[in-house]
Image 1 (cartoon, rainbow, N blue to C red):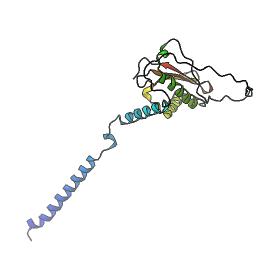
Image 2: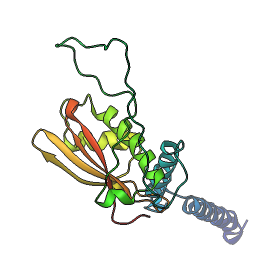
Image 3: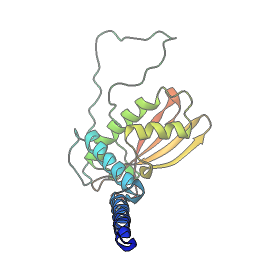
Image 4: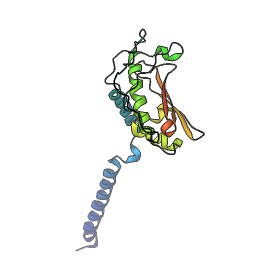
Length: 201
């Protein structure tokens, strides 16, 4: 066998190996790596989860999207039975029933529609319940709790320490509404109030 004929199998094997390596590289480059995914994909998902949470919270509320006339607040019922009192040393417990807020007569809140009024009480209750037992309400801890409830960074504003409390505001404008909330996380003195945003989304 001549030297030229002996070299042919070696050359053929070298070509096949090169083709196999090239194909393998093409397959790897075609696979989508985490870095190839859009950077804002997580933001889109969290935005969708926030919208879903807003819909679920406001599900019992009317579908009103425009300011309406004065809303009537039912007068408190007076019971003739014995009034239960707690012992003086009994610890305070967070409210379990939704409290009907008083209707404002001035300021941006008067422009909240019926849906916003209804949803605000539900948001106020769930946030207050979650912050009530927070012993040291630092801004980081408050942000974590708000995240756990479904509120996203894009809607959390003015999160800051104020003495031993942490203050924050939430933009909850949705479907043309103008709802926002002002909150103060301070353990058993936690307060969350509705306000009117400058404009709805």
